[in-house]
Every structure is written in C-alpha cells, then in structure tokens.
Image (cartoon, rainbow, N blue to C red; front, top):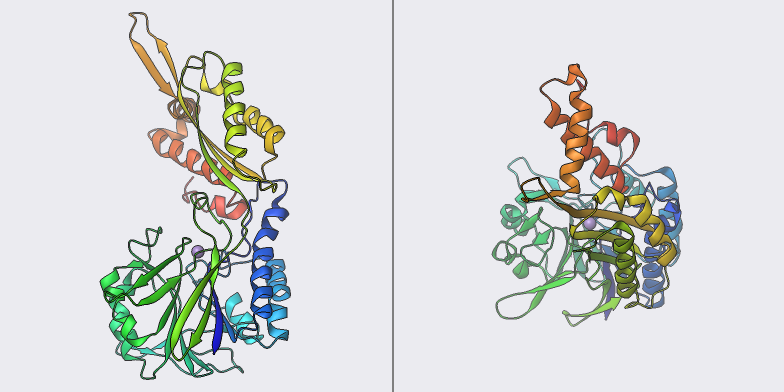
Length: 415
Ligand SMILES: [Mn+2]
C-alpha cells in the first residue's frame, strides 16, 4: 500500500500589513503547514503533494523563506519527498533570476516539477534531477508523478498535448488549475469536458488553485480529480468553505481518499442592517448587538477576521459613524485581528419641495474628493480619473495587502 498527503494553496507570507498584530496572522499559515507536515510524518506517508501557491507572492521576504525551510525541515529529516508545482501566486515573471520555489528545490526541501516545451509546442516531462532540483516527472513506489504549474486560461487547450507526453502507466498529475464550475475562482479554469481526457491518462489528478474543496468524477462515476482547497482561510469569501487536505491510500491501483479537516482562524463576513436608525448612537448600539449575536455562533476563541458591511437608509450623515468609531467598538467586542468595513449606509433627507434625496457614503466621498482635486488647476479635466485613482489606493490600503512601492505602482507615470 502507498499513502500520500495532498494539499495546496498554503499562501505562506500572507499577512495584513496595516494590522498592529500582523505577525499573528503571518504565523497562521506556517502553523497550518506545520500541522500538515506533522500529520504526514505521523501517518508515515510515502510523499506529500503541494498543488501550487505554497507562497502568497512570487517575491517573498527573506524571513518567509527562512520560516518555510524551518517548517519543511521535519519532512526532509523524515525522508518524505515533498513534491510541488508553482501556482499563479508563486509565479515569478523575471526569468533571469531564480525563483524561491527553484531555490527550495535545489536545497532539497521540495521537488519542484515543471515540464519543458518542445519546439512544436508539445510537453516534455524530463525525469527529476535532485542535483539541479529540476524536472517534470518523478517515480515513487511505482507511481509516476507528473507536475504542471499554472498555465493560465489556455489550460483546456493543452490537455491533449499533456496527455500525449505521458507514456507510462500508473500516473498521477499535479496541476494548478481550476475546473469550472466547481472552482470558485474566475480565472485559470477549464471546462469539465476539457479536463475529462486527463482521466484516461491519470489515476489521480491532484489539483490546486480554487480555495474550496471539490472532487470531479467521470461520467461513469469514477473520481479522478481532487482539489483540497486552501487549508487556512486566505481571503474573505472563504468563511463557509470546508477546510482541510486529503490523505490518500493506494492499494492495487485503487485510490481511496480521506478529507482531513483543519482548524482555520475564524472569519466572519457580516452584513449589518441599520435601516431606520435616527442617529449615530442608536446605530452604533444596534451595530454592537448584531455583531455580538453573529459572533456568539462560534466557540472559537481566536481573534477573528472580520468583514463588516453596513447597509440601510439612515437619518444621519454616514460620516458620523466613521471607521475609527466602529473599529473601537469592535475592539471591545472581539478584538478582531483584522477588520474591513464597507459602509453602504445612505442618508435620506427631504429637499425643500418634500422630495426624498438619498445619498450614499460612496457618493459623498466622491463629491468631497472631486472638490479637493478640481481646486487644483493643474488637474483640470482629470477630476474623475484622479478621484477613481485616490479611491483605488484607499481600498488597497484598507485591505492591507499592499504598501509602499506596490501602492506607488498604481499611479500612472505622469501624476
Ligand atoms: Mn491560491
């Protein structure tokens, strides 16, 4: 019997750069990988598969690389091969420098599989060479493992060429791609009928990319492609997904999977309805009650990640219920690790002739910014463009995903 562990989308290096406790969030992803590594060792698996997006970005910090090595060390010491492909997040566009994934492979922490291409556009899966840390194919206990990273929206068109390049039996494919409509990700998917020929060539297609787990079967009902999803909650929108990875046992060529659940950080996306609130104090009271009620549904004591959307028509200026005020209130209730607030309140007033006027916070923000920008004559005729740019930068900062150089990158050169 052969056993292996299949995970993907670990996203090491992600944090919220605007959070005071960014280290706590940063450690979530390493803690998660360490738990998976510990399970692989406890189960004495023959190998571990990582279906792409080990890292959150192509350009990681040196300490992220150091922590990754620390975390994978136990697997290396136990002589359990860790086989990985690159995801869209690990992808490095500058081909003149070595990627972090390549470095890990050269150092023996992972075996990075990547095919080469033939002159006529075909695929070539060269045997993996531990000396150089490169190759497209590796055999372990009679299973031929082929690896393909992220090839983007063209994936569906490449299936025939991928299958043609494989002539062995008992094959497994590690592939960072989503299959529509199982995958919640919009980009980088192929259609189920485009993926189907893979079922003939490969006994198990180990997917990565979509952060939600799913399994695809042939029309005859044989499960052939497995996506474990991200073991941690990476982005808002993942709060309801099952979280875990697969432990797979292979006996006489039959693959038997078990989904092992993980324990990700609590995440809550809450829409708070403040419709009809007469003043900001009343609205804040209602806000506190609704948040507390929603949080009481979980008994996880870890500091949650929160996305709060305020909605409703109120009789006070939405600015009065500012982000700082809401943030302080949330701090008292649950000390969230990270908060994103989307204020969709709208102010309802009556004009002189009794007509209802409804204005949202977004409209008010645009007006204020527009006035400030158009006051400077050198920005003449570009008010809308610059208001849009200012709001885009504001949104990036609030998300906590980008800072410094990355934010400057949003600016067009001539500004
Ligand atoms: Mn991912």
